Length: 176
Image (cartoon, rainbow, N blue to C red):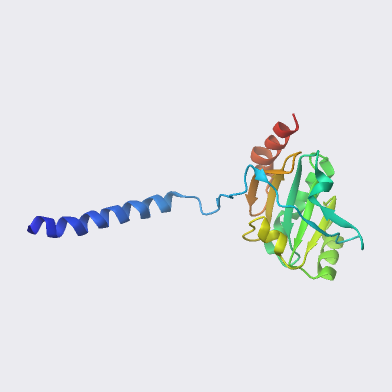
């Protein structure tokens, strides 16, 4: 009876220790998206640069493209921006911006200052579209196929290495 009294708490402790050990082995930057391999949410938002024009998912059907969530207030967005500008100049894949919860004048000034890599940039001033995409924070980038399905999500700044090893190989595969 005495062994049972100590073995149950010891067993519970061992199980909790196992869960803790497993959790410590996970990459905190990897947050799986439930939208991978599902249709991207529909959206139609005002274009940041062209008053009266709308930017919609429908505009990109038939193309593999990237949706990059960004904001002028986002420090990490500034870190990745030169990578996006270089990618846009390479014409490897069209990039659509989703300007998230930003002031219009701040967003336009930011693009004027640092360069505009976007085919179009949708102004998501309320953040509702970002919520539909399951955005946790900026920057986040989605790879979307010709049918409008999300095929990958990169959380955090895009780097040349992430482009070379993850994003561009997937883009090329989807284009075939």
